[in-house]
Length: 241
Ligand code: NAD
Figure 1 (cartoon, rainbow, N blue to C red):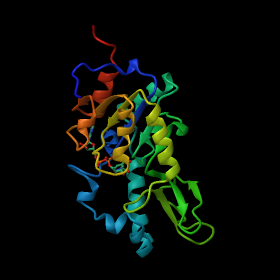
Figure 2: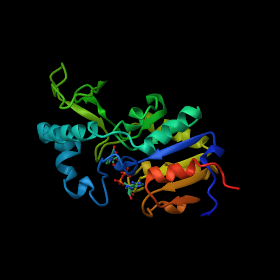
Figure 3: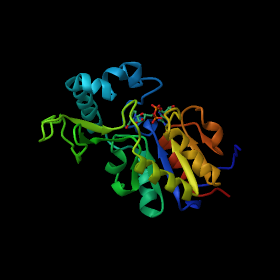
Figure 4: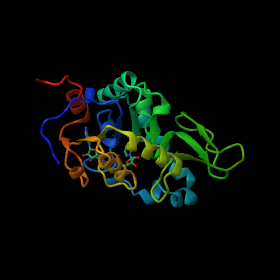
């Protein structure tokens, strides 16, 4: 049920920040959907699925090198910094993110407290044997592993399955949460979009931060229709009596 009295986040200890592309929009990274969204401009079937990579790995790497270059030139914004501050102060809070940009970590969150549902632009995986390594080169060079096969970005592309262990970790965190704060996600990418429901069904307080309503808005008690950094600043204010 929607409620108008918004409790401050200080009231909670096991907050899950469930973040999407809208959180990084204020850093200058385009979202997937909506105005300026990258899939309005590019066809994912040419750039972001295993079939495209098998067909033309160089073309897919050119696209991802451009994305790496763009993200490397951006900085974490106030929203990322506020989340990092809360995690520093509260040891049982965690981030579950659909983002692949690494900005939570660059804002100071330890990697062990960021569950990356869709992988990371900053890791690569051997396309033959699946070995995963960190790689922050822009552009990546060489594009092939020592075994001769191509590296591929260790991200969940369209038509890929999510890593079961990562999903399980996210599910565990949501089961234990006393608050879920969803930030800047359109709620249309499954199975990620279903995860907040786990916390809500266990009675966690629920907040949705987005510029607009989403197909899952009805799940949330508190809906803040404003940019992520503005909403997070409001949620961190002491309770007004
Ligand atoms: P999306 O692009 O589908 O939706 C973005 C949402 O954020 C929209 O609902 C929009 O209204 C909202 N939004 C835009 N600006 C905002 C702001 N300043 N404050 C608050 N909300 C804002 O994003 P999604 O739901 O995360 O999409 C899913 C896929 O996009 C994921 O798989 C993710 O891997 C990928 N993606 C990641 C990045 C990134 O890592 N930064 C960028 C683009 C896409």
